[in-house]
Structure formats: structure tokens, C-alpha cells
Image (tube, rainbow, N blue to C red; front, side, top):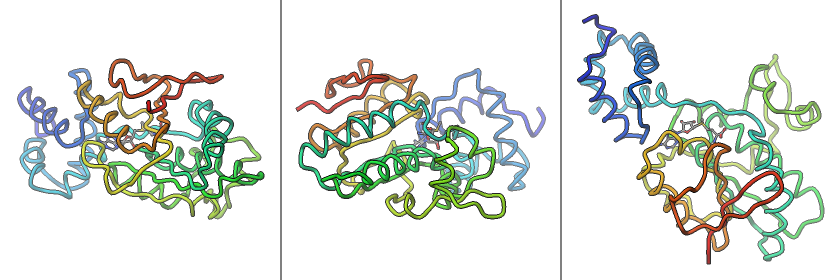
Length: 273
Ligand SMILES: C[S@@+](CC[C@H](N)C(=O)[O-])C[C@H]1O[C@@H](n2cnc3c(N)ncnc32)[C@H](O)[C@@H]1O
């Protein structure tokens, strides 16, 4: 076998190890993709074979970070699916305000390179610019991947990133252009705190939230892990708090702690009393 190939046994070992460390379930049909991503890591750090990489994986934290970075799918864009952000601004913020909440806390639970939390921050800016008893909106944005988090923290995007989902007036209002790169304005940045969180581990350092966006990440996990994560997200929610899932995801039978609330354009899950 060539050094850049993986045996059945090694693939099985890698499936197991990756699921254990970040929850991602790799099917047999992902083998080609896995190999090409692992080989990119091998080239970058000069290890001489896949089996050497697998042997080092458990003991070498730096390597583990690189492999998890390589194996996660970070696809994201501005205003993804649109309606969750409209519902947030038109329905959820007013309902928090009606309840007398003056400081709202939001969590973007797998924020990738930042487009989701910055879109939330755009909605917050628009809402807070009108008369509102809701005075402050704080956003915590987390991901397991340190490389996407670094990009998110910088808030600096190229033409390709910026072309996905933003209207012209939003580009003008929320970005400064320098040397062909689009930099998020401080007004949006200052209400977001980025931090690394593996959804398999504890969320207790994060505190409580009125709204959680956990979108397009549960699809990579097993049913048991989905149930566990949704139940622990429920624990982070304030009474009557809201959970948004991705367009192709639903609560199914993962938890009975939520009520399905239908708004024009989409569904939100609200914590039951
Ligand atoms: C497809 S992106 C979704 C980004 C954004 N929520 C959206 O909907 O556009 C999935 C993100 O989940 C992150 N992820 C995967 N496994 C994770 C885990 N165990 N804990 C935290 N984040 C994880 C990946 O790093 C990736 O950035």
C-alpha cells in the first residue's frame, strides 16, 4: 500500500477517533474526501504516511487541531436561509422587549468564519437603531475550529466571501474596504465575543442565552449526540428562550423540551415552561 493510502482498518480507526474527538460521523462514502484532506495535512507538516499521522493523532494536540480543522465543513454565508434573521428581528427581539428584557444574549453555536454572528449583529444594529427598551444585544460566537475562528475574529473578507448573501446597501453600511478586502465595522464587531467550544464538551462557561442559533452542524453528528447537544442547549436557555436550527434540520424526536413556533417563512423552537 502507498504511504498516501489508508487501509480498511486504519479508516475504521480514524472514523472512531474523529467521532470521539469532535462528534463527526464519517460514512464509507467519505473515504475519498477524508484521504484528500488528510494528505493535505501530511504534506503541510511533513509526516511520511497516513498511518504515522494516525499513530501521532492522540498524543499530539497541535496535529489534532490541524486534522479537525481539515475535517470540518465550514461552508457558510451571509443571511443563510434569510428567514431566521428576519424572524429574529421582526418577532423575537420584540417579544424579548415585551417581556421587559433590556439586555439580550445570543449564541451562534457553530459560527464558522463569522458570517452567521455578524449577520446577527447586523440585525441587532437595525433593531437597536429604532426606539427600543431592549438596550443591549450581546453575541457569543463559538466553533471547534481555530482557523475559522481566527478568520471570524479578524472580520476581514475577500470579494468571493462578500458576494454571497449581502445586498449592496448592507456592504456599504457594514464594511470598510481596504486593499481590496472588506473589513467588518467596529459597530458590529464590538458586540460579539468569539471563543473556541467543542459542542461535545461543557457549555457552562458561556452562561445563559435568550436565543441560540445552532445551524448546519448537527447534521454531521449521530442521533445520540444530537439529542445530547439539544438537551444541553436547552439547559443554556433562559425561560421561554428560542432555538434556531438549519434549513435541513428539525427537532424530530430529539427532545420534548421545545414547542414548535411557526412564523411566516420558518420555524423556531421555544423552550417549554
Ligand atoms: C457548515 S458550518 C455552519 C456554519 C453556520 N452555522 C451556518 O449555518 O452557516 C459547520 C461548523 O460546525 C463546526 N463544528 C463541527 N464540529 C463541531 C463541534 N464538535 N463543536 C463545535 N463546532 C463544530 C465546524 O468547524 C464548522 O465551522
